[in-house]
Image 1 (spheres, rainbow, N blue to C red):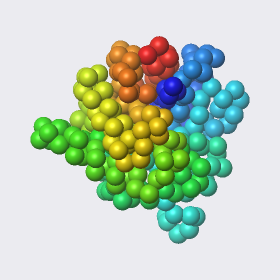
Image 2: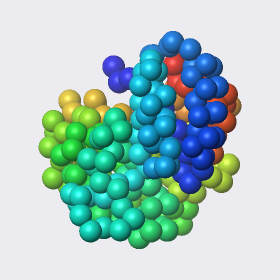
Image 3: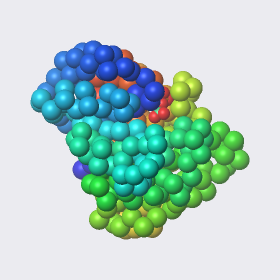
Image 4: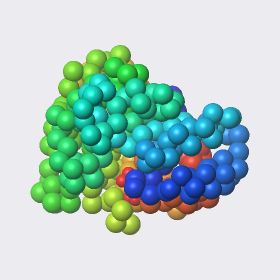
Length: 254
Ligand code: PGA
């Protein structure tokens, strides 16, 4: 049985002060239910404060939005895995479509980061997904196949089970246009079958695949009720502590 994982990707939002206010309300709303794994993914500047807040009670885990693959060194503006580890960061989002399209991250770069994260005992949340024109051209499976092979090259079956994959159709991110539960389930089933083909079916069954793209309290339960949808990567709707707590509760029911 895969434990559902719901992550709040705050993107470039939330000052330290706003993060503190969010956590106060969110942890209160969340209560003691730990049937779902919850990951808060603040901007780098708020990691230390959110880490401190989470050190009491541990109702949620901490994630980072990106990292560099190199060991510490002359890489102005970058953040390394040991820096994240020091703050008790457990997950790191890699290859988000905004990183891929706005900052030129290729599958090869995502692969280097994935490798470095695993080597540093951080769990990667590797994002994949097609654009609207790729979907319209019937290329969803081709794109997912290429991104899985490229981003996860060299990952062993033992390592794969700790990787989280986020299927995020680019046309659904921040647009209010969610994939239908069936569209999402079809893509997730394809991804799992591909993992079984490239690694093995026992490992593929253990990998958690999150859906991302305009997830909100109103659609979360139906999406996460699908057989191969094991959680959500939530952007816009994760900025509201009450709304995000509702999404976590929907995951617990799904
Ligand atoms: P959204 O973003 O929920 O605002 O669509 C999801 C994401 O980019 O992870």
